[in-house]
Image 1 (tube, helix red, strand yellow):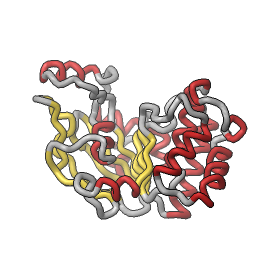
Image 2 (image 1 turned 90 degrees about the vertical axis):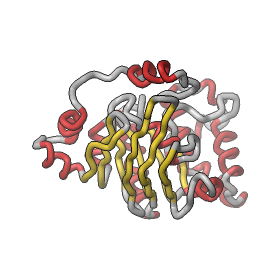
Image 3 (image 1 turned 90 degrees about the horizontal axis):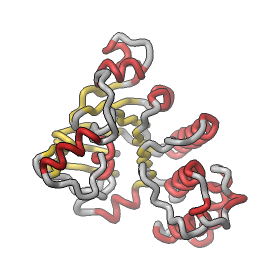
Amino acid sequence: MIKVDNLIKKFGNFTAVDNISFDVKDGEILAFLGPNGAGKTTTIKMLTTVLPPSSGKIELNGYNPLTQKDKARHSFGIVFQDSSVDDELTAYENMMMHAVLYGIKKSEQKVKIEHLLGFVELWDRRNELVKNFSGGMKRRLEIAKGLLHHPKILFLDEPTQGLDPQTRNHIWEYIKKMNAEEKMTVFFTTHYIEEAEKAADRVVVIDHGQIVAIGTPAELKTKTGKDNLEDAFISLTGKTIREEGADSFGRMRQAGRMGGWRR
């Protein structure tokens, strides 16, 4: 469902993603893990047509995101790390706008919107402006929006960041249900390593722009001799604390190419 071959992304003299290759099977749940500044978000932005790669090949659902953007975009849903909801619209209006953009039939729009807003427990707040929502409520709305058109691939960039354990568990139960019932492929990043251990069929670990390990959670634990995936992850990437984007930001300043890039 996803194929990545020799993917590279450079910002001036700084290489954010350094010649990575992997694939994701149809219906697989894959966790893409790495410390801050490892290249996770940059990779997702290339996979979802937000950033063009410097070189390499990408295939999504059989489509080339560079030459077949519209077909590729209709194949996936995305929950970005940064909010993409419109604060000046209501929750319902945000959902309706997404439904129209993705060509959901008028006869199905209201039913699907009610179902998903009910699932994330926002139906009673559907007519409120999103600017009045808490960060957690906005996150839940983002997830509902990403699921609205029943995508073949769902990209999740730290989807449960800032959510309480109950909400995180509730959302993951629904995502795994859709994965099982509709064979929806899920590609996600998270700093909650226990989420990856519980949900992922396989894990890709990236650090300093390069892939350092690929395998099931059990395989990575065996490889590192650790009892849990978090300890295995630290064994693979080291114990050095990474400040959010600090190392990458400094190198990008030296390259003279900061504009808008985060990770």
